[in-house]
Length: 416
Image (cartoon, rainbow, N blue to C red; front, side, top):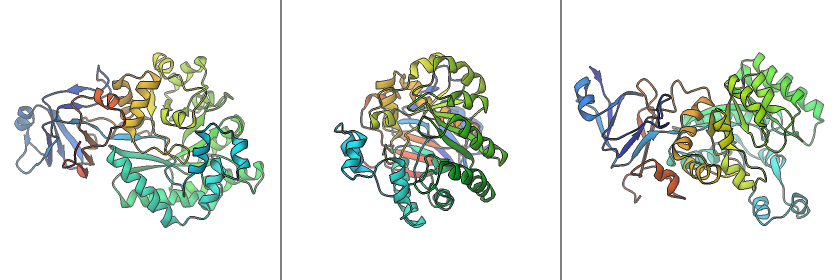
């Protein structure tokens, strides 16, 4: 008999989100979750678990009738930044144009955040990002992808990635690090000089230090061309960095087809992706990461067409796009936006934020679902059924969160 170290009992509903779940979330009642050290050992009725396992020393965790599900995987964030762009946001929501905001002397966009980053120490960046992560954990997120991209110089890009490493060591949320030197162009270098720096300095140094798993690029009109993006992504592949791409956010210049050609792990944003490109993305196994909160925050004039993409058989993942232009720490709110504004069903949205998001990070073999052998990343919410996550607008704080089998957030005594 396997020795069980923890048992999650008294769940109103358990979601496995297993790949073969016919309802997409594997909703089960009268079910307990058995954990052995850091992994899921078994899922079944109390009698089934007791008959097959040694429960003598197991910690009994009371779900208090709540919803037990995999921890959320936030697969696209710009977590590390200094200060905010609240003045810019306050003007944008009043309908002022970029030109009007610039005339007011308010710093704007990626370049503004990059300038702020130069003032920040590594310790300051760790502290501010750790606070955001604590909030994300309280909303049931157990894994977060964190991109560089606000450095726009070798030294500051490396600093951001070192912050990711420090964050992974000091708090429980798992950090997946992505290099995004090709996010924008700096003010003090020519386009050609900066691309050369990415190719010949940044990527080799990031790889040498083992600071990132993925290499990302912003392939869109006004940012990086398809040819430039290809060169950067192929250089990353030469150094062992897997491909991600920001594309089709504000124009259509061919980034999605580049993602398919390079078999990117994910292509993100996808507002302008053409229906005739869906088949190539599907056949290449590219996960499409869509971000309802970003479209909401910027008042995007062309929201992504999630329903058409899902109907075409594409795998869609959801993420917050946590960044200075979309300050959001709650994946449940992303689920709510996806359902109300983008015609996701509640089960589709939850699956997109768990199993599919894990696929977007190449980790679906160990996180994103509750299945025996997978890491015991579990969130418990004060809902009787999973549809409540989409229905109870503005709610979403977890009751309990486990990371690798250990309780890392406990709000069971607070009012729900």
